[in-house]
Image 1 (cartoon, rainbow, N blue to C red):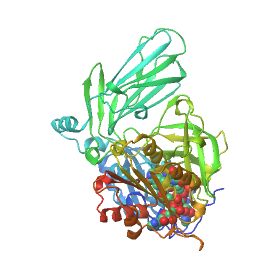
Image 2: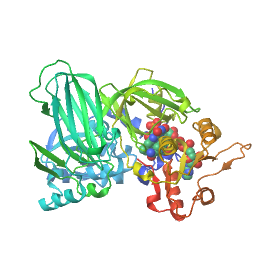
Image 3: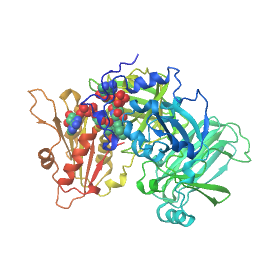
Image 4: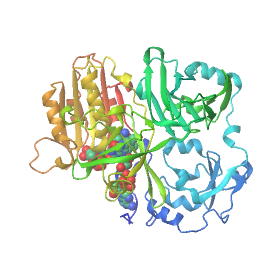
Length: 540
Ligand code: FAD
Ligand code: NAD
């Protein structure tokens, strides 16, 4: 049984009072936590008022259901009666009412696109839209679509395939030179083959039901100079294939990534078919036509890092190629009493010091996470209960941090609070080993107490070994013996800490932690005349 507090949620001082993007969460009444909602959905109560019938909903019908006690919302073509959910919605009733009787997809994506609404609201499903309003609304004239593509989209990628007696090679021509092994995610299961290529702010999807069986493992090669990716599959039987396979959902599509800048969001809900080569090439403006893809990963090890934070190691299946780029996060998904719950986490390296690192494992099959267990939280206690050998679903990466920010970088400042340290781990490793121009890295690490500091001794050893690194710990609730820095993020702490090496040195400040910490930090950095380009804040 989960231990979920029943007083108002979130607790008055909980970090969960502010959602990502600074949106305030509202206090919920007693008995209206997420766990209470899950219980209600399992109670067998008719939540739609339709006694389990699913109907086709016209736009006119949808519009009529626009009151609190009769509120229907369409998300991605599916209509939900959200009236029973009103009191459980962490963003409050008013937030839900903004989409009452209409298509709430865009609003939903702006606020919490990762939330697994299909699972959370499955008992509220009324039916499908008779005609998808998304397609009707916002259709731009042809010329505008083409112009936008020409100006903002990458040149069309394409793919081809060829075979030998024992191998099938799928070649993806990205027509971009800045691609690497992080740019391609491959999964195949049974006969379904899926390759997502990240090309700038777009995702190019190859999704095929293969015509013949292949072995589980495969290799991926990138020819950076020409922007070509080769995926080499091993045939199960050495026979000649007449064709590669049949197209599956969204095959050969170019899709704006969910975390791409607003440009593409403004143009959402447009689909355009463009005849390209032998097949129909689909350019999809709708940001969520392709949801995040999950694969099951096995828990390999779990070790205590602090009293409440653990290092989890997950192993990717052999049929997956996935490397999470620096500064990006993934979503972990677990069923909790029958409902799929999803939360974001930022992969780290196995350690900060090479002598602690496991020998380099083939094909980057392992993903590490530093995760704080909130004993009264929903997801982390469940994660903590997993046994070695159990499985958890891991999504493809998301995030808008770009490694190009490190080019010619001289001064790197990292402001981390609590588990907001996680994106800094890979950044530290990368900056200290791969950026020749780097002169100084300074980490200011905010925690409540000394016991909360993640990897303190590794950080101290690294700073001792590499004189370019300075680490400063700041405690907000120290014991009286603590003689280091104390307090919360403040102008006094920052102005002293953020001294550039030279007047015009190239600087980057990365900041991550609880939302109020990050928001306050960004304001202070702006007051200290750091430009927008010099600041990167990590949020969902
Ligand atoms: P929640 O259920 O969200 O609870 C969190 C807090 O609210 C706890 O303090 C809990 O006591 C309190 N609370 C819960 N229910 C109630 C109630 N009914 N009444 C009063 N108080 C209540 N975290 C990491 O540890 N590592 C990472 O690498 C990491 N990466 C992240 C990356 C991104 C992009 C983002 C946005 C977040 C990241 N997080 C990370 C945070 C993570 O996603 C979760 O928010 C965190 O693990 C808490 O999840 P939970 O479901 O266990 O807790
Ligand atoms: P915590 O509660 O232990 O607090 C750590 C420090 O943060 C405190 O000592 C204090 O200095 C500062 N802090 C906390 N609340 C503050 C406030 N209201 N105003 C100013 N400063 C404040 O932190 P935690 O429990 O480890 O939480 C870490 C947070 O970082 C979570 O909210 C998590 O979602 C977030 N996080 C975000 C990302 C990301 O966006 N990429 C990655 C990892 C963690």
